[in-house]
Amino acid sequence: MERRTQVLIVGAGPVGLSAAIELGHRSIRCLLIERNDRVGHAPRAKTTNIRTREHLRRWGIADTLRDASPLGIDYPSDIVFATKLGGYPLARFENAFYCAPGRDPRYSEHAQWIPQYLVEDVLRAHAATLPSVTITFRHELVSLQQDKSGVRAEVRNLETGAIETIRSEYLIGADGSRSAVREAIGSRLHGASGLSRNYNIVFRAPGLDQAHAHGRAIMYWQVNRQVPSLVGPMDRGDKWFFMPTHVPPGMKLADFEAPSLIRDATGIDLPYEILSSDEWVANRLIADRYRDRRVFLAGDAAHLHPPFGGYGMNMGIADAVDLGWKIAAVLQGWGGSLLLESYERERRPVHEQVMDEAVANHALLSNQLWQEGIEDASATGASIRSAIGARIRAAKVREFRALGVVLGYCYADSPIIVADDGEPPDSNPTDYRPSSYPGCLAPHGWLADGRSIYDAFGTGFTLLAHADAPPAALQDAAAIAIAAGIPLTLIVVNEAEIAAQYSAAFTLIRPDQHIAWRGDRLDDFARLLTHVSGQSKPHHRTRRAS
Image (cartoon, rainbow, N blue to C red; front, top):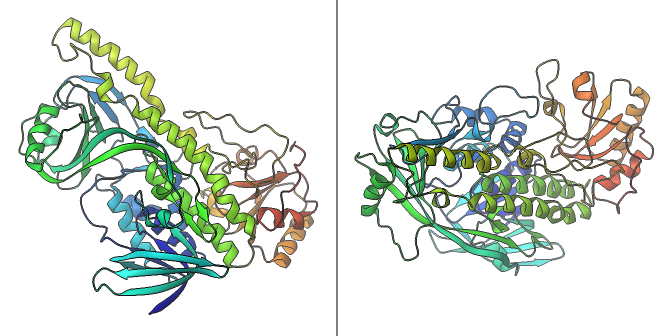
């Protein structure tokens, strides 16, 4: 048997599903294969960050994910540090990760605390509505070969054992940390492995939310000698997660031991029903290359890091978006080869930055915060707790309020960005300052009619102009784009607050909402379009916009 598709995606987790949605919204035929059933209790990621939800907004499913929130969208996304769930408080971070609903001028969607398996449910259901997308479970990649015209993959049906051949023009490996695609193209992970051993345990505990005095929160960090750990509510039905951190070498956890471990960690004696448990190891690893001709890596197949900061799934979804629109543009004939070359050039520096943040967050866990006397019911104990609380508030704000990491990354060095002689924005993890510098995320704002400015962007490029822009110049730009076959949407901004964030008279914005170019004139617009669509060598630097 032989099947044909434009893009074969290996792995139907959040990254593979997001790639399929990005391609499917552009009518690109793609086939997802997944060796597992993608079911279970394992918590995996729990933070869907602002940028990911902005992608879901583009796809029309941000509200669907909001409605799937098991704890309710108004549940406070606070982080509590305490000696134990049943012990003394140490510190509290309100609205961690910016999950609080409501409008903010800096972004179009708030973050959301929701288990990854529910995120996958929403993505999978949406992907299934797209006519050009097919998802096949219980199928695994056996081998792949490439030639000038495409990729030939052999895939095994795990139910029948039958092998079929799938021909595609491109292949995306979104198949996780043990990626068969990465192995097939000879890419290797490099970096630091075995930073710590940890456990993920999911359990049911009726009444636990009422059995402590710390109030509602999405995560409780427990700082004690017995079991340094994290615990928090995860889903309806009194489901919680429990994560002992820096587990000592040689320690093995069997399910029957877990209830007593939870009792020791929390100081609360309740019946604990264990639903699942697994070990995970914190690593900082990155692939030496993300591409071999027509085959690309995305998500955990390309990079692995500790989960602290909630970046993993979100960074992989951003990979899928970056790669998805570019492959679609090439297949549709308006994108050139430089688009595909830009994928690793753009994403690798972001991965390195985020991995450094995650490793820094991992360096200070409950294990390192414990101090003798922290649980003493005395003035000395209170003084120790006060000092540790101050240390937590100073050190951990970067982990829970990192808007600069989530929204502030910039593709300034990309071969398909037209740089100018302006100053790129400073990188600050906790202080996001929107910038119209080429490569940055387009500054957000709310239009007079209540929409996000992002809602007005097109699925291709968007040319944003100030209100005093000459209409003839915009008409000429539209005609040039039509002649070149490049999709272009025109926007004239009348809102002064939004216009003030775009320093040039004209700003060209990519399909992924990053800025490709800015300038005060539309001279040689045809050449500009061929550059930002990857059809020509780098454009010269332009004069700084006034």
